[in-house]
Structures are given as structure tokens and as C-alpha cells.
Length: 396
Ligand SMILES: [Mg+2]
Image (tube, rainbow, N blue to C red; front, side, top):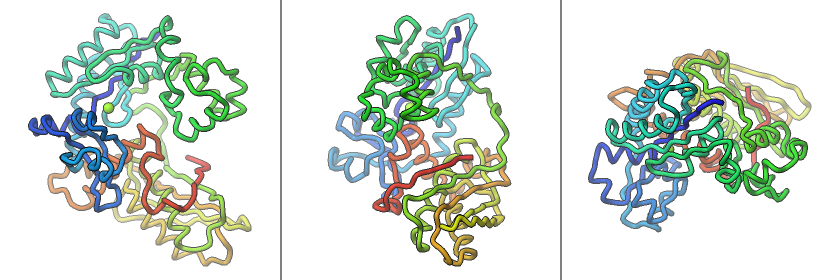
């Protein structure tokens, strides 16, 4: 049996700010995206703000209404990156199998380590406290899914052990939405079949979940029963990717530039997020258009610098679309991809003279981080609101 740890730094952005400025511990405080730039939302909060009811992902004005003396701090991504790397270096002392999930979380495979999973968890917690001034919650289990659930169950500064003996008691009563990859829409579809807890998923017939949700339904059944076998990936494992793209068909045909812009923005958003999640940026932006007669064209443009910014990808995609699409017919489907990929590492993030572009990265990174944990619906661009749902068909 494997021993997998999942470590999760508590209230990460807010805790890092408190390390730099300890007086912030004494007041309710939240790290928030700039209200002037569309994303006026809470990215992280400290314990006092939490007690006042402030929630991650809510609008700043809502948070302030609950907590009028809330101290608002803008995100400082390079700072968070520095602490994330220090934590990862600590983890890497115990095993070379350390797989990051967002900035503040990672899995470790410590199977066969002489000290045992629970002891290592205790040591990670102590070292995070003493060496970084942060607290971390650790889940210890025999698969990645339960280890991640464990790190969520008790915090801050706690260890939760989930074994083949206790998982029915500890995991099964939890809401289905706590399971990794169960976002709001999956949760709704499960609830429609009266599947509300992780135990409900586990006890449902596997075929029923496949019928209801396809392959991912089956995957959830495997997860809920503790049967996940997926390995903790080492740095640089996984296939080399040539391009990152996304395409979509909207419920109604797109009939004008404004409609196209709305969809291209959503696509650019998701492509940029996936690029950054994989530590990549790219130079070539490609737009593909399929009209309602099912004619497909695609055009591409090479930028003078590589990017993983949704705003830049969208601007380029829209310029391509305007320059090449003549509106002879309404548009059925649009796609955006970025290729000519290179590593994002060490380029923009650590610049001492943060310019506007760096600040956009800070914000998009922070937003992406929240979405990874709370689901894509947690934060939506204002330009997408009110336009109906966009269904992503394909990721490549
Ligand atoms: Mg965390």
C-alpha cells in the first residue's frame, strides 16, 4: 500500500502577508483583486476576517458589508511564489515525488520512508511554522484523492489520516462537492439523482454514474471507493505539450463581433489558465472559426513576445477574427489555441520593477488559483455575465 501526503498551506496569501507585516494578524484582513479592474473579489483572508464571515471568492463590497473595518491588501504574487517554492523545497527533502497543485498545495509519495506518513506530516507542520512562519494542514492516506480530502478536513496546522479501515466513517459522510473535480454543475447533476454525499457516490452502481456523467462519473466512483491509483508525478513528468487550446460551441449561433468577443474572452481565459498551471507561455495565437454551414477556417499570428495572459491572448484572437472573418454566415463554433510554447519560469514573475504587465500576471494568477480550488464558476469575468452559459466542448 502506498503512503501519500497532501499538504495545504492555510489561508496562504493572507498568511504570507501576515509574515511580512505581523500587525495584520490583529485586524481582519483580506487579500483582494483590484476592484477597479473588474476582479473586485476576495482571494484570501485571515482568521479574524473569516470569523466575521468573509468568504473567499465573494465581491469586496460584500465582504466589507459584513466586516466594515476589513483591511484590504492587493495580491503580491512574486511574494507568494517565493513561499510556495520554500515549502516545496522542504517537501522535496523527504521524497523526489512532489506534485504541485496550485501554489499552496502539493502531493508527496513517501511510500517506504522509514519515518512513516504521520511522522513526516508532523514534521512538515513544525517546519512550516518554524522556518516559514506559516501553518499547513496535511492529509495522510493511501491514495491522492483521500490525502487531498484529509488536508481539507482539519485546519489550520493539523494532520488527518485516512486509512482503508476508517474511510467509510471519515470520508463517506462528506458532501459530494468535497471530492476533487466535483464542480457546481456536476454537483447539481448528482443531486438530481439524489446523490449528495461521497458515500452516495461510492454506493451507487458504477454503470449508473457512467450513464449519468460519462467517463468522469466512473472516475468519481473510483475516487469515492478509495481505488484511485494515479501516481504522484515528479517534476517534469507528464507529456511534453505542443499547444494548449480550447474550443466551444455556443447554444445559439454568434451573429456579431460582440458575441464573438465574449466567447473569445472565455476561451482565452481558460487557455491562459491552463498555460500558467503548466508553467508555460506561448508566442503563436491561433483562432479557428466554424460557421453555421460547417466551413472551418483557422488563422494564426506570431506575437513579438511569449504570453500566458488571457488579456493579451484575447486581444490577439479578436484582432485575428476581425481581420479575417467576413460575416457571410453566423458562427457556430470558435477555438483559441496557443503554440510555440516555452517555459514561464523566471521570466515575468520575479521582475523587481513590476510594470502593468506584471500586475496583470499577478491578478490573473491569483484568479486562476482560486478557480482551481473553487471551480471555474467561482469567479466570472463581468463581460461574460448575462450572456448565457458557454459550454466548453474540447480541451487539447
Ligand atoms: Mg491552502
